[in-house]
Image (cartoon, rainbow, N blue to C red; front, side, top):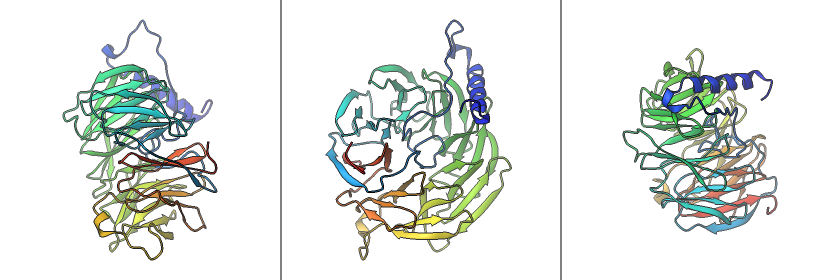
Length: 396
């Protein structure tokens, strides 16, 4: 990003955020470090990166084979993170955080005081951050050493938290309507409150975007409070993805909409009154995207919102077991070439390439999968039960 306008904006954002921090958060005698841009991880947070677009910065395998099958003791409590080497960061269902190598072997495992309340985050400063249900933000080194432990002033720390990496090397944490910005040492540099319970947060063009489940969209610059930008005009429980100065969301379970972050103008790209649309969405070349419709189909939407392709998540002639309908809808991630990796409870994971038929990955089904986790040259499918399935063109 060096020498680019985006890079300069990120640098200014980091600097202003540092200056706007309370005096107790900064030591005038200490050299301050500025971290600019995103980290090197392939899945840095629950939405893959701070744009929340579920789009990998890599290409999925062209001839995928399952090379890893493993079940982790203690289960998995949150969507895994993956670093630039293909290592996985696992927040277990029990109070424990582990790092696994590309073959699923444990590199280190650290006991936590309470279970994770957010997915692990890989920061641009090279740390691993996790928010616990005791309301603490923990920062570990890549080698598993605890570097910082900070109590967060959350009114209800037991609820699920959203956490994304920020351009200044820290993290941004959302819980209910509360929003906290932490620096690379875990020190709180800004406290904000949104106009409703937050369903997603994102960072783009040196600004923080906060989307509430009531559809309201607010924006905060490098310093200052949240300002209302507009509203999707309906419920947005799965949050929104941000790309190209716009937010994209599924509204009221049947509309596919975009909101301009400069003007607040909302455009309805598709309105499917007879079909349920679920998210989170996987962005392609925005505003193209992959959505889940009817509970069991991948729907590819072009830039004008029209459907260009539809693929069943279940095998031909197989219907979804009614007993599984209470589980979370299918989850999708995309790659740079427009391929889609999809998981749904009770069915094998699939990989769909543009213009090709879906390839089903045999014996990878589980009842409660997390979103697919991209790795260098591969994908890992993880389940709450602790099952891991590693997919690659060849074993690492």
